[in-house]
Amino acid sequence: MSALRKSAGSVGVGLALLALGGGSALAISQSGEQENMRRVGHVDLQGRSAYHPNFIEYQDGRVIAFVGTHSGSAPNPLKPGAPVEANGVMVIDVTDPRNPVETAHIPVSGGQSQSVRMCRGEGLPGGTPGRVYMMRNVQGGGIAISGYEVWDVTDIRSPVLASELRALRNTHKPWWECKSGIAYLPGSKDVDATTGQRWRVGQQMMIVDWKNPHMAPQHLRTFGLPGAEPDGTGPLPPTLHGAISTFEHPQAGMRLARGATDDDAVGNRIYAAWGVGSNGVLTVIDRKKLLPPSHGGTWTGDPDRPTVADLNDATTARLDMSNDQGGHSSFPVFGMKPKSYGCFTRFQTRDIVLLASESTANRCNEAPHWSFVVDVTIENSRNDSAGPPPLSARQNPWQGPMVLSTMHVDPRAGEKYPRGNYCTRGARFGVHSSEENFNNPFYGRLTFLAYFTGGVRAWDIREPHAPVEVAFYVPESNANTVASGYMTNNLEVDNRGYIYAVDRGRAGLDILELHGKALQIGLGKDETAECVNVLP
Image (cartoon, rainbow, N blue to C red):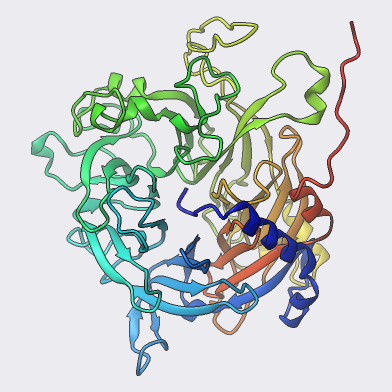
């Protein structure tokens, strides 16, 4: 995970502050729409339209947030004369969440830089100990600059470009394994079709070895849905929005709920969401079968021109959504043991994926979009032979993943407040994304969703078939907000439990905290009684 784990002691201190620091939150203005969640800090991000927040703990204990942005430009008052700069990545010291400090802006020379991942140098196999690195995408602005960059951000006031990968089509939201240096990058090479290597759908998955942040990465292969490959035929499959690798998950060595072999382990999976807001697909990928032998895998095919068999072989599960729902975020939770399942004798442990479909139109001029709880306990009918009862293979090998429930916010819920129905507030309403930090203290009990005009919503997922909303915070517009209004775009939860929520409508970054019942649930202090089977 790009957000590095804190020591057990420092996590405990952070949670103590979170639980006891409610009074100081009153010093900052609060939204009139909140429940069990409040704002503790804010920065305006120079009035830039924000996309993706992320964070990392530096070697000296500081916590630094990085926020990718959409296209546009604004003055940068951190530099003499406040020159106007194209939007890029904002750097913010959030060590004290009640006093966050913007320290730098890293512009792009064209296009936009929406998404970021970070690694510490001592973690990367080719990194320099004591240094910190940030990876970001550059999308648009011409093929000559479109691609990915790695920056040395050790000095948070003066970042330095370390390496780059250019001439890529359709870049977006990367994932970077710090322990291996392998990155999973939306996009594909911009090569002529006559080479036989141009993918029919540009935004697929490039896998690269970027273990040395000071050198251009080694391309390992390009991967995608069948039909997108250079020799594919038929209708075009959807684009990759992003992938999440579990290689660095705290439970990486644990077998999956129905794992049959040691390769069926938490750390040997990649969860990919395709389609964004329509024609969604969720795939689960066997990491070992995806990578070549040089990187601990078993795949030996053509890195640029795979066969359909190449693509299917590495895929362990697939769920196709209806065409009105997409795949934006695919965040897995493993080894769940719902208390209500205790009276049953089989399948008491479940693996799930939180799959979000992005709302894409203002004022609800579209289908409703949901975040789904998808059960992936059985990855496919072909390989499910672990434990009683072994299930027979079916004609459709992908039989297995299923939607258990949705986390839907009724737009009429906004009518309790002066701003009214969420659909009529000017901007988008509906789900966008979830948090993606396996090390946040609420993992497995709560999930957090960005809901655009519905703000930040927290859900109790301990009973995944029946999630319950337990907290929310709906930000307010400010002097920087565009005419259509505020719009909570993406969020993340750090290792201390603070929630970072950024605004697409240029209203900045809010730092939030839980309190009340939601905090008790998140910390595991509100456990319900187990169902005990007393039958003979």
